[in-house]
Length: 275
Image (cartoon, rainbow, N blue to C red; front, side, top):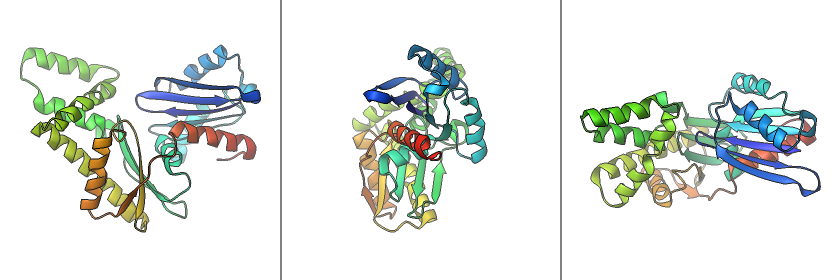
């Protein structure tokens, strides 16, 4: 059996396939990276699988980038498959959207990162440092600043914000505010429009930075992923901002989701022993 997992900040998606056309697709609330192994063990038990039944498992995870980070997480998965690999969720999203082509992926959902790849396979990134030090232009970023600037200095409102800030899923709760800010922006609310425009300009600036780092020739293929970039109006604003900032871009609709790329990598890992 082959398994690909896309472990995002909010949702986890899994695609599994086996002999005689057996296949499964699962989507659920995302466990933490540390809680992923028990999450998968429960699925294996439900499907009556053991480690020997799973030829290859590829997990695309948020917050994983360096070789050391990948290896540390791969050790957690040893008991789940004969071969297991962990890659960045942004890398899987890029490969799902653009395949092996050079270009740029703008990923903005709960968090944000802009990832680029050259014709020779060199990677460059901007952003992606998480909610404490980064995630500029993301749903979390919009939600945080909206809550901060529109808060009422009353005991009731302070208590409401304190509950959000202290929640174990605080980043997800704060990011969930962004859709309402986008709706307000569409209704010409000045404050909301300012936040949304600023987010679009930041993401566009990241894309310009990555294109310059990789010296990508124009027109640069630009694709997207994440709930925020799935919003047609928000995405159009990012593409307009790219043009204003001087990047000649060609918008390329994503060919497929990150979980499909992770599953394809699992197939390659089972056949060739590498991804």
